[in-house]
Length: 143
Image 1 (tube, rainbow, N blue to C red):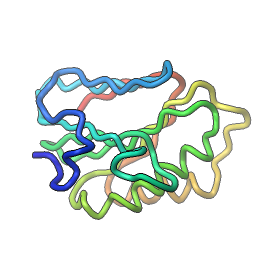
Image 2 (tube, rainbow, N blue to C red):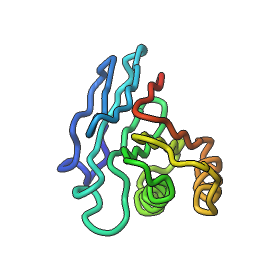
Image 3 (cartoon, rainbow, N blue to C red):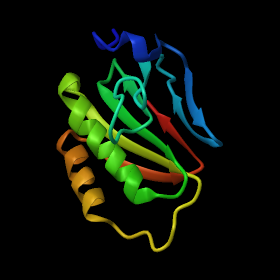
């Protein structure tokens, strides 16, 4: 079941075996061998119109996982901020879900030090049992 009130930003809600979220050469693939019900929402410009927000929200409904996805060029600090703000704004509607942060970048600048915001975001995600992953160009997740 999709989240009530978010239908206008829903790309799909079904049991597809492979879900791909792609933008400007960056992508994340969700492998859904168990054919669980999954849903993809557009956050940027749809669920959240203004302010800082991530690009997409991918839900594994039968498993209660919420993936906050940011597809970014090279600004890791800004990508972390975008996911953090989105979790703060949408998290209340996803009670009981494990929050996962996924940042897919074109390149990661050096040095890749942990900012205060990144540490804060990782703590937010850990409270729900989730984690943050930063990958270059693509990632694949089994759900």
